[in-house]
Length: 112
Picture (cartoon, rainbow, N blue to C red):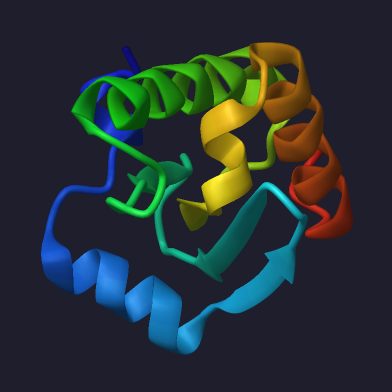
């Protein structure tokens, strides 16, 4: 689980990132990022019903959280990030999701 201070929770925060932030796409995921005034980054995940039933959606969310946790020590602070899963993410392995997250972080210049 991500630490409490690394989570985006309020619907207004998600909406703000999606409206005002920049977007990068991968065939498995979309990453939206917006600078914030904090010293740490916060993350939110969107996994819609198009992915599949609850078990599959929860598996994708767990894998995405784990992938972000793996990259967290190398990430620059001060961003709100929303990661949106595409339907193909439902059938992707953890390794594929982790690589997709890393590629999006690199493209967004979020790595230190």
